[in-house]
Amino acid sequence: MPYDHLQDNTRSVEKTIQLAAGKNKKIEIFRDRLKDGTLGPEMVWIPAGSFRMGNTQGNGDNNELPVHTVSIKSFAIGRYEVTFEEYDHFAITNNLFALAEKEQ
Image 1 (cartoon, rainbow, N blue to C red):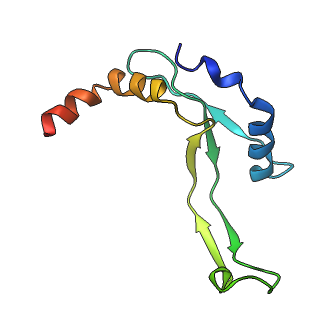
Image 2: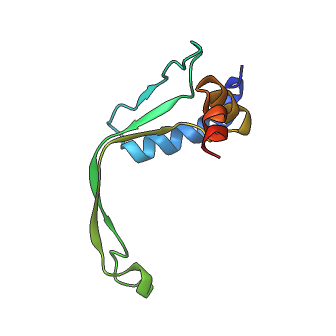
Image 3: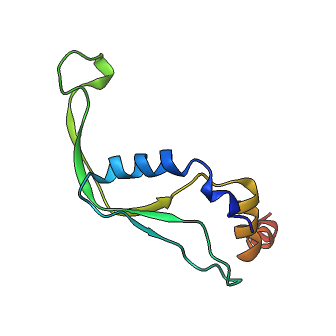
């Protein structure tokens, strides 16, 4: 299966996800079914939120100012990086190579 490598680096990925979510927040991880019935990659749901971007201590470079609020809408992102094998599996399953050839 194309997603067998998902056990690699699990501890460091889990720490990063938990840090991003916050200590007391539940991390929502899901997998969609592809058109061929196989499971797609693990996805992590990122809730909407805001954060202050820039140098908040006042001792940064010019490109870190002005400090400003950034708001994001909720979205899902792959839990792990996508390999060429995984992308090819997805593209074949969704007939994307045929669509690309048709457009040329």
